[in-house]
Image (cartoon, rainbow, N blue to C red; front, side):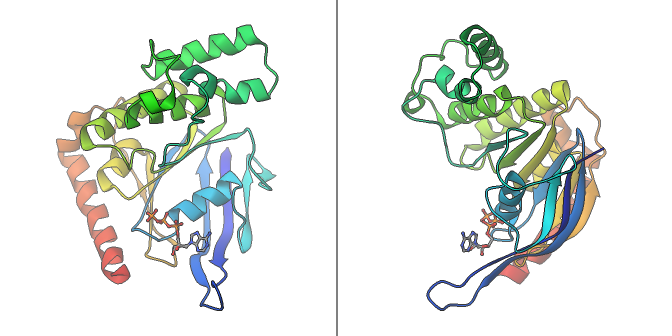
Length: 258
Ligand SMILES: Nc1ncnc2c1ncn2[C@@H]1O[C@H](COP(=O)(O)OP(=O)(O)OP(=O)(O)O)[C@@H](O)[C@H]1O
């Protein structure tokens, strides 16, 4: 079954103060299957975030349509959970209050909320930090809360926009493993934007490579590496072959953009 259908979606931003309009996306058509982990890889400014924001219902396409599980997207919805690169926790709420925010909005009873919060706090390894404020956490911990907050609402689709982009390499690697473990257990549909080639391969079952702006999909690459995946896989020949292939695709685009 198709989780997300992207049909001839384009996006042009109007020019600022009489300037030229920016064509961010030229028509993109693709379908994301239910339970798939799709990474979107492309050079800076190619429209990756724009595409994800359109799927999230945070922006509207200039032409074309997006539907989620057969229903046209007209705005944000509980069926899609989003995690951004910048830390977007509510600073005035504790870790557990951040995670239960959506559940409270839905009117869920306290006992049930607490159960769900405890489950996701454990899942992202934050036991003992439930009463901490976001500013008392490292960047990696804040992103774990953001992922727990998105998962707690039980969305069918998880949309992640460079969620580990601001983290140091070591933390980034650990976060990739954590997200993979969650996906291997739950198999939610995931759309994950990144400009990191290794990350796109390690996490995804399919990678959409975008051209330089105006963005379109130039390659649709199946990542047929077995699960569960371990970071040591990054040194294996099959991984390195994919890395070389995607590096060449991206280099071409980066040169064009430069
Ligand atoms: N709200 C906006 N108004 C005007 N132009 C915009 C707006 N949002 C994005 N753009 C432009 O659209 C193009 C694509 O931006 P987008 O953020 O989608 O790229 P990206 O691939 O996610 O980049 P990066 O990897 O650097 O985050 C850029 O040229 C950007 O300046």
